[in-house]
Amino acid sequence: MDWKLELVSVPVSDVDRAKAFYTDKVGFVADHDHRVTDELRFVQLTPPGSACSIAIGSGMDQSEPGSVRGLQIVVPDVAAARDALLARGVEVSDLQEFPWGLFAFFRDPDGNSWALQQIVARS
Image 1 (cartoon, rainbow, N blue to C red):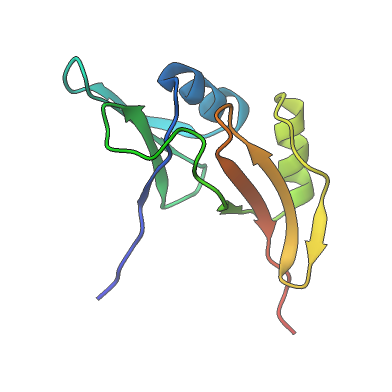
Image 2: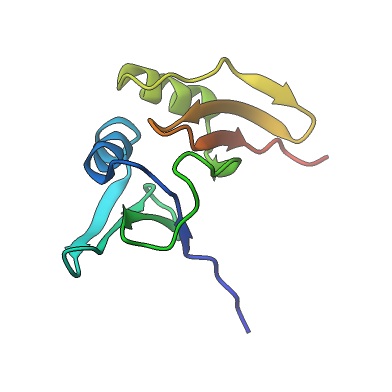
C-alpha cells in the first residue's frame, strides 16, 4: 500500500498576499481558490512538477501564521532555482553546502521557512 503525502497546510495571515507571493514570486501553480462559506476560503498551490501541494486559506484550523519551519523543495540545480527566485524579488540565502546536499533558504511574507535542496550523488 502506498502512502502519499500530497497536501501540507501553511498558515498565513493574508491569503491574497500569500497567494501572490507563492504564484508570482516562487512560481507555484494555483490549483484551487474556493470560498466555501463567508468564513472559509481554501487555496491549493503546487510547486512545478511536485506531487505535494500546500494549502493556505482563512477559516481553516491552522497554527499561527509564520509557524511552519523547514519545508523542503528538492530541485535538480539549486543555484538556478535560487537565481530564479532572486530574479522574481524573493530574498534567498547564499548557497550552503552540507554532506547531504546543497541548500538555499527563503521565507514567505509571514515567516514560514523553506529550503531549496539539491541532493548530492551518493557514493
